[in-house]
Amino acid sequence: MFEKLLAALQAAPWAQAVSESTWLFPTIETLHVLALTLVVGSIMVVDLRLLNLASRNRSVRELTSEMLPWTWVAFVCAVITGGTLFSSAATRYWGIVPFRAKMVMLMLAGLNMAVFHLGAYRGVAAWDRAPAVPPPAAKLAGGLSLLIWVSVVMLGRWIGFS
Amino acid sequence: MINEFATWLASTRANDVVQNVTWIIPTVQSVHIVCIAIVITSVAMLDFRLLGIGGPRQSLADTARRFLPWLWCGLVMLALSGSVLIVGEPARELQSSVFWLKMTLVACAIALTAVFNVVLNQGATFWERNRVIAVVTGVVSLGLWLSILAAGRWIAYAAHG
Image (cartoon, rainbow over all chains, first blue to last red; front, side):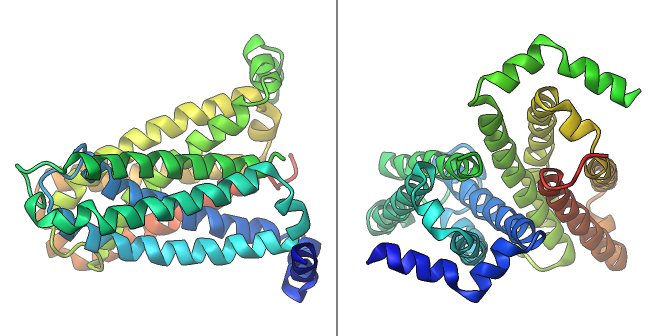
């Protein structure tokens, strides 16, 4: 059932176009790299603030409201470009371990973010500005997020070598 | 001369190690991409602030103070990780015209950023007073860094020579 779905995706006209063209794949891949650098970079700004390692004199709420729109726009672009690249050889990518691991790490990134927003971030008013320091739960969320996103980059790069 | 250098690099022990230890190239490329994330995000924050689009709560000088150190450190890391990749695959890089195009663009982007940095150090108001120069600088800078990112990815696809 799922295999059929992947095969159908791969047979879609745009997927065929990407796999047959010499320049479409590198072009979409370049846009994917641009989008992912903005996703990872903007998330790192927030993570480093949560870890109390950078932007210490900025309000956490101001910082997140400044960075997250960038993150989301870039993330949507990364999903669209990444999904197009995936569809060009869906059955092959699905069988690759780094691809599956990358999808798991993306889900963990989402889970970590949800836990943070429903947990430690609710009390942000108490540690929004210096000299208050983010609580251990916020530091943990920031540290985990950094590790998860670096692993997403590594696994993504590994897909290209598989 | 470049060809001889590339041939010599290919014969070194270091080249042998990078080539034959299978995890080195993907790992160093991943480090390279994370550093690109740091540089591109810092550049985007600075240039959008310069264009008057982003980060209105913070002055240009404060934005620069926050992001310029990351930009410069990221560039040093990129030079180091990039050098490992050149040692590992000298012909792929040094004999590629896309690689030299990228290096030329990098030199221009670094020069522009350095000028921005120096002018800022002499008084933050220059960029506020000269809006046209600020906008042109922001647009050129964004164009340069995006071209560098694209050229980097295209080294892998361009034929040598």
